[in-house]
Length: 447
Image (tube, rainbow, N blue to C red; front, side, top):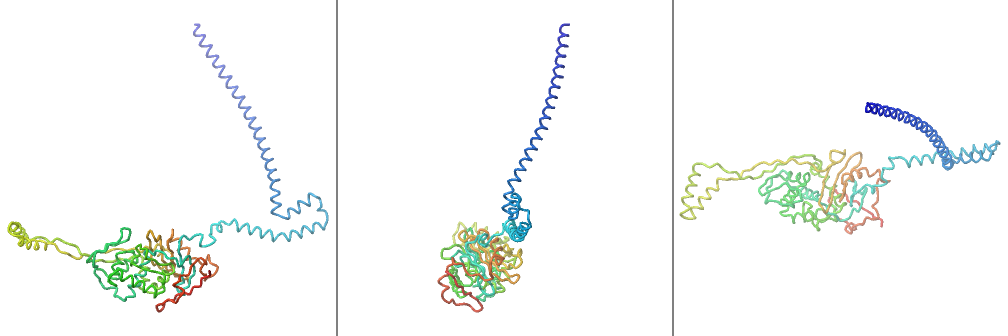
């Protein structure tokens, strides 16, 4: 019985404690909500005080930006706006200050315009090339230049000169030629794997050189036209000087790296302008896709017949007799394989990334070696503009060329003189021999 009473007593005490705890928590909650209300009132007061102080502190800024506020503030505080004369003075001050305020607002709008903030002030802010020339294709005059006469590695832009020599040789481009030996190029160079006995046309070799930039195709052209690479390079140098590219020296037809092989942006522009006057060259470099055909030789095994079986048996039996008989039978057995001609078609794509994407771009040639960097020659004809654009050793040849297409937006005049930093080459001081129909611009350089 005592145990039951004890349990009941404990339960009663626990219930009383729970009830008391509930009431105490409720009272505390009421106090907290009351305090929160007081805190809200305090915060409101502080916020209004801060806003008032901000208005007062903002008053000097208004005074600085508006001279009329100065006059009104000064007059109101001193209590002098009481007569007609002071009113007239204020009104006249208002009139004189209005245009100034308009000009100030206009200046602010110019400064804060996001488009003008992002727009570069000059071409130098966006161009990445080490050497640049923009040549007027019609007159031959320079539109824009950056170190135009600096000797640079031309990379595959060399192939422009290779095409000029072939086209000026007046060879029949439909003529089928035979490759005289296996043509090997450096592992980092573009190649189509031309081998001894391969047959193709000079026209297809031109497409391989200019569209696909195939280095072995250039060697094939050189050996067909001049007999050797060295003799062809001699022709390249002679014709380059006749055209007006007097500061170039070529030692190979494909632009593979060599310290003796160099050109300038100006020379390459002159050569490109000359080449674009040839309709065959212009058509090739402006072609997006083209299919060439190479007839190559392939060794095929001939099916053996009864006579062949007899010869094999005879070969075994005679091997014990003498070597002469064995040699004769071996020759007959080797005749069981023969060479047959197989047509090999290759689909070529133009590597000029702007061709077909920007109206007026007529293509020409891309180039790259580690020494030369990224290079690009472009012909552009649109909206009254006819330009040859050369960019050498650029981080981004595409963006540079796009900017140079619209270079008149950045230039004050249509004809711009060379910068004082550009050095005039010694070879330009004399009169260079020119081919008929080629315009070589006269350039005066201010020092």
